[in-house]
Image 1 (tube, rainbow, N blue to C red):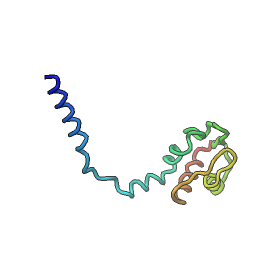
Image 2 (image 1 turned 60 degrees about the vertical axis):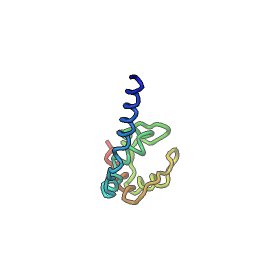
Image 3 (image 1 turned 30 degrees about the vertical axis):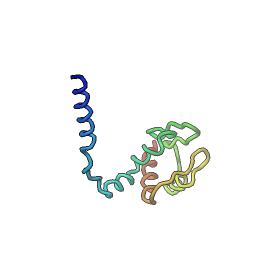
Image 4 (image 1 turned 135 degrees about the vertical axis):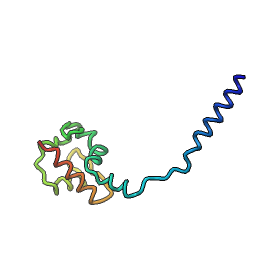
Length: 108
């Protein structure tokens, strides 16, 4: 009897795992819109050193709340790196701009 339940359980697991083959993916526009969200990019790419508020100062990173950089200087730093910060490879100029614009919002 125990073997019967094990067989039924395994059959149900296999059946359940195979049910989602017809899922549709999200439209590309939704994914692209999300990529250009500066805050989202910051949280994904920058918080390890800068922290969620931009002021952690870990691993030699700048405290972004007291930065005097212009948006162009921020974009340049993101693209090319500076001192302890490595360059960040993003997919488009729009992403660099969105990230830099978000960094400006972290100023005190």
